[in-house]
Amino acid sequence: MITLHQLRIFWAVAHAESLTRASKLLGLAQPSLSQQIAKLEESVGTQLFDRNRNQLTLTDAGKFLLRKSELILASVDEAMAGLQEFTEGARGVVSVGALNSIARVILPRAMRRMSKVFPQVQLDVHEVSPGEALELLYGRRLTVALVAEDSIAKSNVSFSRFDVFSDPYVLAVPKGIDLSKVNDPWHDLPEPERKVLNSCIQFSFGTAHQRRMEEWFQANIPNHRVVTQVRTYEVALSLVQEGLGVAVVPALTARIGGVADFGVQLYNIDLQDRRIIGLIPSQYARVEPYATFIASLEQAGSEVEIPSVLPRPPFVKAAGTTPGTPPRPTPAKVG
Image (tube, rainbow, N blue to C red; front, top):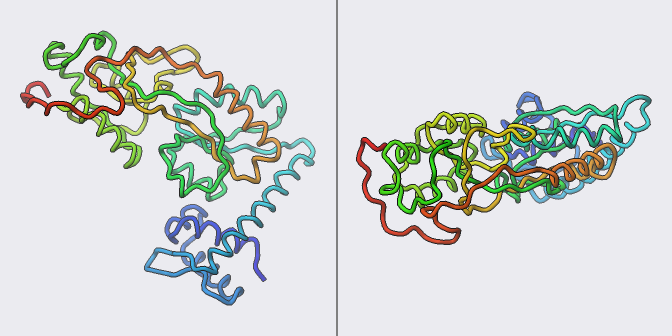
């Protein structure tokens, strides 16, 4: 007899693809996971995983059971979510994970709308990276994740998606540095401002994002050097505000709240917009209060006001163009 507990463990291990990661997702020790998988394989009479050290690959039987387990677990979760509505005085908890820069702009407006329909619902906010948000979703410790679409691999996500908002990537520079007429930073900027422009504040948000930012800097500010590595947009913008360098950030991260902004100037740089999406297990998307929460997020996203963005500086290459002449060497004193 297969139990729901075994199915949940199997489902998490199948998505994690390793016992180490599955152990982290489920909060269970690896020996316990191994025992549960072994018991499940004994129950069904066939091997579900091919094992290579700590890596696990589904067999054909495992792939079949994964499809069925997703349907079974979704039905159970949907039933439990629906039954919460019949619990006297309780409407449940909505757990949502997002970067701080997304949460502070979207969640207050969404919660205000939702509270008009479900005043008893609690919002449990987790300020986490996109990768951590996915792990918490797979571990069933989050209901909704708000992430940038380009920060996740589409092939690795098996949740319902919905659009929230989009904002452009911009170059954040300190107040007082005017790039509107700069065709060549080497000639058109005084040395102190040129040094700031050549000082790159870099993010550690994942390989794909970091590579894209490095390519942009190499194409447009080839003499730059990385002066600081950060993990939040807020820290990056604070460093820019102090005149310590420049950073490429999504425009909305420069908004502190309401109409207050960081003390920086934002320039259009012709990069593809950041698209923020919501991820939710499909069984939750169809029942309350989650359906109302999704609608509230979508409405809040449509009302977002982008901070003022200045036109693209002349030296920044338009999208789709290739770098021009090789960069001239930079003296050490320029940085």
